[in-house]
Length: 359
Image (cartoon, rainbow, N blue to C red; front, side):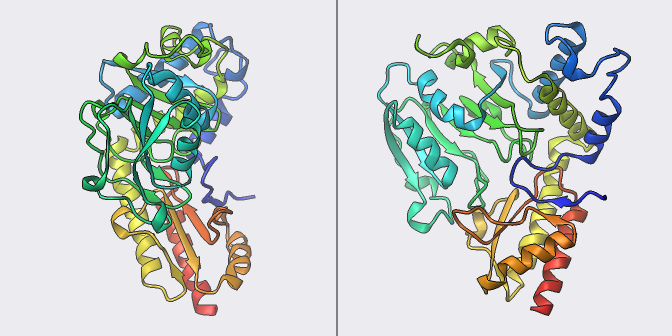
């Protein structure tokens, strides 16, 4: 069976070259006589894999020396709870920006630990835009300001980094990390689940500035304490070793593609062509303000919702999978992360045009 074009929001498709290499190395990693998933995480073979993975991420993102890079578990959802526990440092409030479902989830969890100051919200407009920075309200006493750089469900993405002065900036970058350049020095902490642009699910990358490492209270378990994990090279417990290995292969693949600058141009082309096709159509529409449309997740609806099931069925028959929109918003959604080739987007556009012609 040939591979489909997989538009899943996550876990998402992986580069075919990565899967081929993993298959070739499955039984015997580079003459070790072992699969990576059989290796001791303390052995020299795996330690070399872990070091290369970490160094490649630092190189690709140009992470400054005064930051630690952690590879944790629990997904972004765990960080929703851990960030206030690890960063409040005795303060009673933190600021949040609400631009969609994942922001809402982060706000809900933070509310269990502190008072949440809503610096800005797009909820009244059904999360179809990003409030102008000039309209944000930020209390200087906030422990940090949190925002989600790309909302996978509503298809809204920040194109610029917010300015927060002396208040540390915290970002959930799960769905657009490595897809465009980012000035890491502007952030206090970045976190991202791996299952969109970095690899399979099961790894959460946390990039944290050194001055924020020691703010956790004694009630935070060691495996979730940033300082303790940094000191242990993210190995306080046995890590998901094979997932680390696959993440490393994706980073190596990204370097062969020309790095983040090159992949950004590809992402701009893919998203631009798909939005152009939607905007030129009488059947499809996208509700998001064009100024903040996501390059990664493109939601769209059909003018006649009765055609949704037929659209999805015929799309799958044409090798286009996982196009159903999130249950909370309905419609369709095409997730076109780094690994989605331009040919996949072109195939979707061609199918959409033919479906519109016949319906």
